[in-house]
Amino acid sequence: MTRILNQVEMENFGDYVRQLRKDKEWTLTKLAAMLDMDSANLSKIETGKRGFDEKKLPLFCEIFKLELETMKRELISEKFANKVYYENVDETVFKLAEQKVKYLIKNDKH
Amino acid sequence: MTRILNQVEMENFGDYVRQLRKDKEWTLTKLAAMLDMDSANLSKIETGKRGFDEKKLPLFCEIFKLELETMKRELISEKFANKVYYENVDETVFKLAEQKVKYLIKNDKH
DNA sequence: GCTAATTTTGTCATTTAATGACAAGAATAT
DNA sequence: ATATTCTTGTCATTAAATGACAAAATTAGC
Image (cartoon, rainbow over all chains, first blue to last red; front, side, top):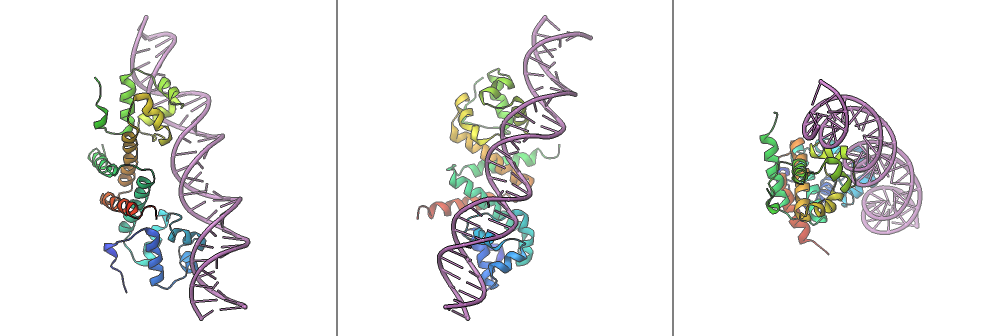
């Protein structure tokens, strides 16, 4: 069963990594080696005890033939969500952030 | 001229701090002392060369009689915006993050 | 213009957070 | 029950954020 990767609908990044890995029937050790990392740490990533290092995303996407932009978005949005959730910030923070990005773009390259 | 602080409409946090400080006619040195920090570093904050340390936000809000929640939102949204802007992430990242927060809340305390 | 006060910039030390690495225990599979 | 795979705990290492200080640049008052 292949996944349609552009409409990623996932609980969290760790679960997603695990699913991709299982689909290929790879062990943690194997995937960890491909990603040049410790299998123990990859385990922590899949179980949500650590975040996935953004620097390894290009390699990760290459391995699983995923769009880097999409995955970057997934990863970053997850970090944002965790921050907002665990620090009890109002969700309007995202509307604000959107405005601020627009402001940054408008005042670009001056 | 007093500012209505609940409808904070600001370019960026640094400019806002500077405005508040100028309104009180305080020097960098004075405000920095109140915030228990170096005036040189406060200068960098006001000119956008550094971020404001979130840990100092409660004290900051007390000094200027601001709502902590509002300011926290401002500060965090700015960090999000910078990340998205400087790493060229699509702005849909905020929609995604919102969904993920909802997911986290839904699966709360289990 | 001169002087003092204020602000900015540069640099390096210190602290803090993220990640790496390894060992040992727990769970799973054969 | 043995080997394999996965998880957990811990500590080392790395990288990022912040603190601290000196000196240059700017501004304000005279």
